[in-house]
Amino acid sequence: MEIENIDVTKITPKIRTLNDMREILYDKDFAKNSPNMDLYYMYGDLVQDGNLKYSITVVVPELLGKEFNKTKGHIHIGDYKETYTVLEGEAIYLMQKGDEEKIEDVYAVMARKGESIIIPSGYGHVTINAGKENLKTGDWRNIACKQDYSLFEKLCGACYYYTKQGWLKNENYKNVPELRFQEPLKSIPEDLSFLK
Image 1 (cartoon, rainbow, N blue to C red):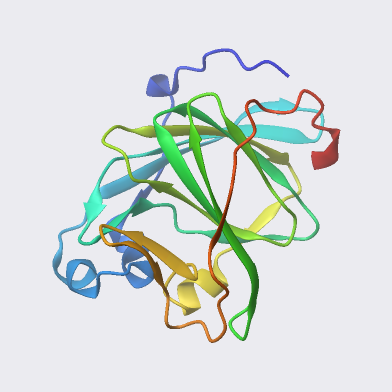
Image 2: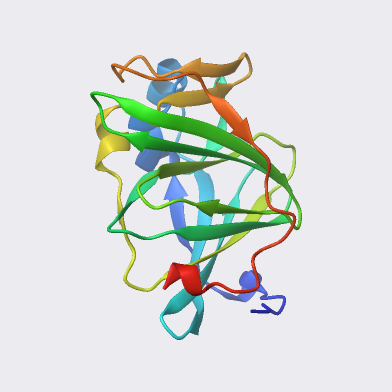
């Protein structure tokens, strides 16, 4: 499926601000003492193709104290996968499977413009912008796919934070394996029927 260059400047986004994110940040001093600011912009449901929908997210290059800017993080409710493609900038995608008692698997994928990833079903995920420019990503998912933010809200974020010191474990999780790394896909799969 080809997506034309969608001009998001003419679309009103949903905005995720620091006030929405304070409880999930690594740097608690920054979270407590910084004024509110815009952290990322969500342009939802821009295209619908059958039972798939396409959205764009723009994450600004902001340092949140010691931690790089990121999305809030969520898990899909139900057996749904999702694809992300980097449209501008560079992304780090963190994916984790498990609950507060035990994370079974956690891995990160670093992707540049044109590269894609597939979020496996059952994995929570966070998108991180550790670069110096806006990170713009496009994603396809099933229109029935809903997000659950509760684990990330309860445990102050994902099981790892990406900071100026590198990757740091989130001590609110009880059992977290070592972080592993995977390569991105060079492009989005042509056949997206696995999302349906």
